[in-house]
Length: 60
Image (tube, rainbow, N blue to C red; front, side):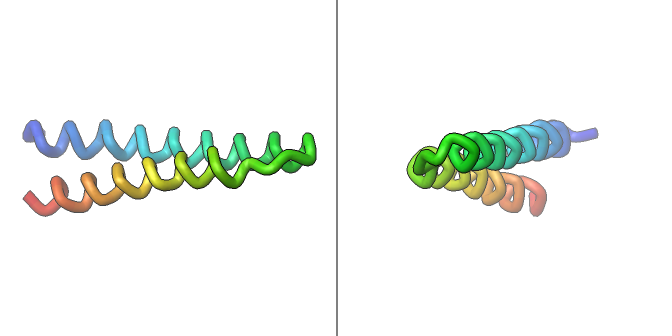
């Protein structure tokens, strides 16, 4: 497996973790009646950035 493939796999794991964190954050906020839009938005922004990196590296 090339270095790029290993990195892509690691990034996929990070992307999944960020997705889970965003959902957990949103669930907790709803349960507590809080507004989680700011933190959830930032987590999703980070997840999308990682997803873009995966797409770029996967094409190499």
